[in-house]
Length: 365
Ligand SMILES: *[C@@H]1O[C@H](CO)[C@@H](O)[C@H](O)[C@H]1NC(C)=O
Ligand SMILES: *[C@@H]1O[C@H](CO)[C@@H](O)[C@H](O)[C@H]1NC(C)=O
Ligand SMILES: *[C@@H]1O[C@H](CO)[C@@H](O)[C@H](O)[C@H]1NC(C)=O
Ligand SMILES: *[C@@H]1O[C@H](CO)[C@@H](O)[C@H](O)[C@H]1NC(C)=O
Ligand SMILES: *[C@@H]1O[C@H](CO)[C@@H](O)[C@H](O)[C@H]1NC(C)=O
Image 1: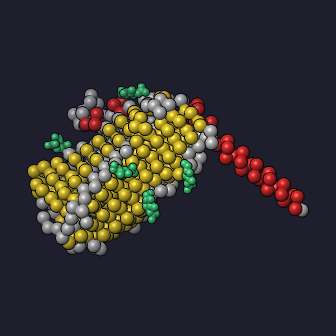
Image 2: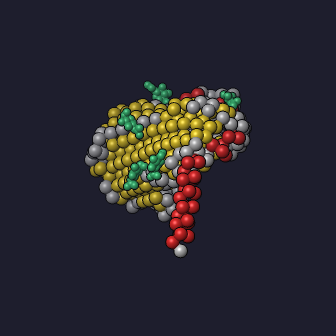
Image 3: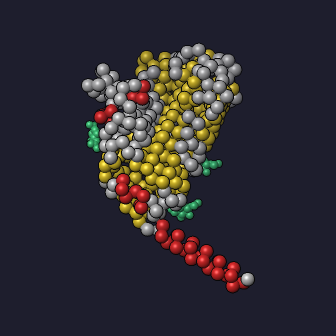
């Protein structure tokens, strides 16, 4: 009896040691063919290479893996659904080392984004991991850049999305900006911090579709549609959102909460804007609307929006002469709770309309 259980322990012990030591190897990826063996290691180094057109570069990593990106990643050009890159795993340390990921945007851009024209692979970067992801430089995304549905707590920092080339029209865009629907970060996860990052694009810098405990701080957003909660569809909750210390420049909107006109059974609650700066806003500084996709249409009231605060730090907004600085379009009775906007300061632009909102305090325009 005793010797047998001792033997079982001994065998189990050897198995554990063997497993641990075999995954402590260093895997190296220089082509997609290397992926299946490299991901058996808890250190994965990625060299410069081109992902073949029509394939996803997918990393399904062991818990605790460290990834080091050591060269530029390019993607073959092909009209297909994507995604181009996907990473899964828990407690991952993903070191981008400021290496470039080039999505080949100009090959796809036609001014139509995901609303028509060429099928564009999206998202470019599908982030399903927990841990930390830093210093990833993404350029020329075909459409949406990062889609984040993290499996556990995740910090993203020092990331750049640069689609500035998409601001120019091309031969397929009929005079419009060639890049379109190039969202920076589309978020549907919880316990997420996105910090010290830059997005230059033609759509939302951040768009939170669902999730709780999400902080977006000290980021720079240029030229797109600013920082958004939404659009909110049916049966989702967005809560405990902290938007702090960001700088939004030359954007159509700066701070937006948009709920689908037809959405039901959803809630947006506890959103705090603290010490942000937005300059040269061109359409709406702050827009809270329940008539999405129309900016100021007849609102629905199937989504409750509660506790939306601009404080304690001052959020300052400047706009062009034709921009509306603040517009709020609530369905009857669906904007509730505390809306202390004493930290909101607007300069220039025009006053927008505020309808069906009886809860804003500390701010008049
Ligand atoms: C996360 O992974 C690191 C190695 O990168 C390890 O030291 C740490 O213990 C892991 N933490 C958890 C909670 O598993
Ligand atoms: C894809 O097309 C774009 C735009 O023409 C180009 O910049 C990029 O280098 C191409 N990618 C590859 C891998 O050839
Ligand atoms: C909120 O998210 C952050 C970032 O991932 C995490 O560090 C923190 O523990 C989370 N808070 C709670 C209460 O889960
Ligand atoms: C963001 O930058 C600040 C200032 O440089 C730094 O203190 C902080 O640690 C950075 N955040 C992350 C998650 O790296
Ligand atoms: C304001 O933003 C618009 C739109 O991005 C841009 O065309 C214009 O040059 C900007 N103005 C200044 C003064 O930066």
